[in-house]
Length: 255
Length: 255
DNA sequence: CCATAGCGCGTATGGCATACGCAGAAGAGG
DNA sequence: CCTCTTCTGCGTATGCCATACGCGCTATGG
Image (cartoon, rainbow over all chains, first blue to last red; front, side, top):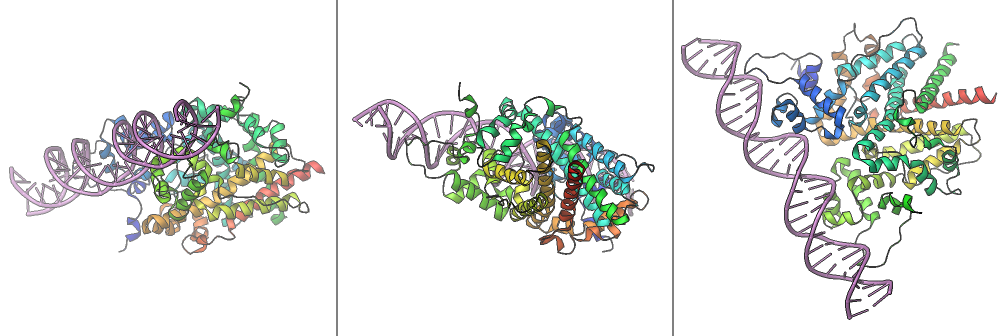
């Protein structure tokens, strides 16, 4: 009864925090959570998240499908662990830089990680983060905000806001990549998005959308700009606005 | 060759824009896209997006599974149409209110719609919006920004940013609802999130997270606050920051 | 009146996650 | 050394799922 709260965390998650004791009995395990997660990530990396099935992962490891369930209770658990793997270590905090530079760097680096693994935004999220690396990223962002006049709740809200910004930005890129994989059909649809939008929106009912379309805002996808989004316009704009808004709040408090 | 660009839009999407001519031949259709979408939405509403299958939709309509494919080319298409249905009509623009009040109202109303239909954030998005109501919401937001010193691209970025804010906020609520549906297991896990976070994070490696936990930031889920989030703290904070950031940018330009 | 286009749907295929149980491996305690 | 317990890999089976295909029918335009 003393440790009942210990027991209801998924076993593999507990393992990722290093909280499992091997009983030493029984046969030596032929696989490991780590190898399974790595294999699953490799599949997502090359063929997209949709290609990750228990049978495929097992086949790539030369094992049978059901043997995976000795290590992972369900596919959902595997997905949770997959989300934790590629984010690796968050950026170190530099004491010399202010909160703004710190958050900027944090958000940009998170975005780079997500861009390298676009399938991350496709994992259906089921609850707040509990895996180690996810928490470490949160720690890094919160650390950049220590010493600011924000309340704790506001700091967490800020981190959520920045994460949402990164995820939504990368989602646009993931769309393009998925489309490219699915075949030329969706790809063509995306490329002609601007044209379609113009066809469907008449000047009377959609003047504002038309203005944006005619200004060429949606032509990015038609050229290749979207495909190598090292420095993305949308993202930098959103990041700038959010940080400006934080700056305004802090100034109104400290001064 | 003149109309080739007309042909590669999914038929049901074209129908939702009112672009289909019925040929009048053949038997009378026993179903309609509208009824199918409504039935699918009803299922998502009551049992979650995961319960929406072609067979379930057909059964609820008293039809066979395959008959649905006469109206909808694929389940993905159905999902697209489902996303369009509940957002209905966006708020009307009020000429007397400024951009800030307009965007505030827009974001809050969008959030209310999403909160009423939390499954919306669970639909895997596959590309930019093309359905009529989605575009009308975009129009409404862009309209609130006409007359501001923002460039067209910046206006669109702003709308994307606000949508991301709404979606990420509602996603938290959707987690809770899904957990409640899945059974008491996940529900309990979510309720004890704060406790778990505290157990897993030691003071040395996670001082900032600990500070937030100890300040009670994550206790919301433990009480019922999260469940009736009519006015949510995170959301209003994020919205305020983004609008403040926009305000700063506009001031720096117009003055 | 009949060709044709649109309709409903039965059947079949190939995928998926995963429950269950068996057979064997290997350390633990006597 | 023996046996019991625990853990392993995995074959089999269940019940979902989306959807390709083709047949029989219907109603209308020519």
